[in-house]
Image (cartoon, rainbow over all chains, first blue to last red; front, side, top):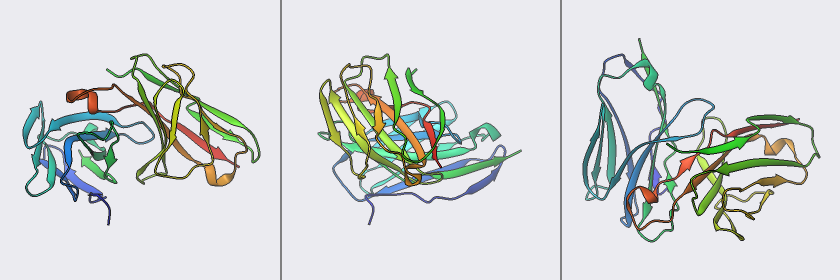
Length: 112
Length: 116
């Protein structure tokens, strides 16, 4: 079983929809949680970063971490066609020396 | 904004050729990484470095080698390319930190390699 699970999708939504993407993980030692967005044929770019449990908002994006359930999510409000990409969750432990464990990514398609 | 560069962006090469994929970052980050990613698939760590003259193999076995002679430069070399090496190669870097954004990795645009 993988340490980090993520539904590969694809997830298709109409423009303007609220999108919820999530990951589950098995290692309770994970402390740092990130979301990356990867456009086709490009490198991942950091979207959101959170430490431990709680919520973090940045514009149309909100990241949530529920460590008790080992579940993280990112919400996209007012989704746009330009949000169409693969979204990767990543996480690491406090003493892991910046080694990240990635989910497999969820492909999102926002249709105009 | 991350400043990490990879060249070439695309490379088509014949079997048996030696190739070097370049990666440079201007952020002064200590740590650098190479990942391999097939289309629509997961990222797999193949090499990493914690600083000059430090290199380690990652989770995925790879026939490639790396070197870290300068902080900003982390090239990956394949001595004899094979069709099985066809993939996208992503370079990343991160700052040594005790928390905060220092734990995050910043990625380059990737090199798409096709070995015929």
